[in-house]
Image (cartoon, rainbow, N blue to C red; front, side, top):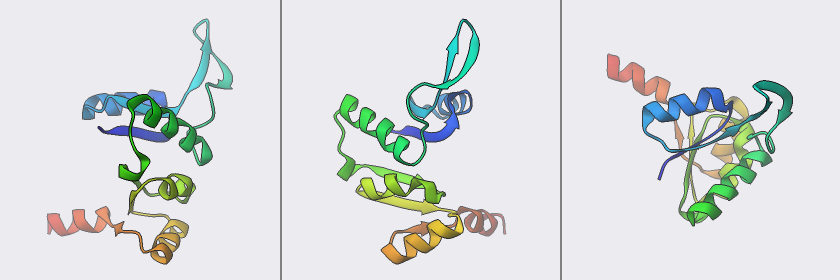
Length: 120
């Protein structure tokens, strides 16, 4: 099963997930009341520890196992999720994440470099 777990708002992540055929979307959701934004979030923002909150809800609902799960990211703010899953891949990381991944021996992929090599 694939899921999008993103700090981006649902207005961005849901259409993308639909195009990609991904049914589970966990992302930052803004409260709407009477068709208007209230300025409040629905639950915690899906970033840092908030991402763990939403992932745990998915794992419980779908009876999944964090130890068997994969997580791909480019941001140091996702360290809590990277440390929670059994399989992690760091993709085009920001400098802090690159350093942390190297120290921990986590796989690092450079998709920008791979795209250039494919075009050449």
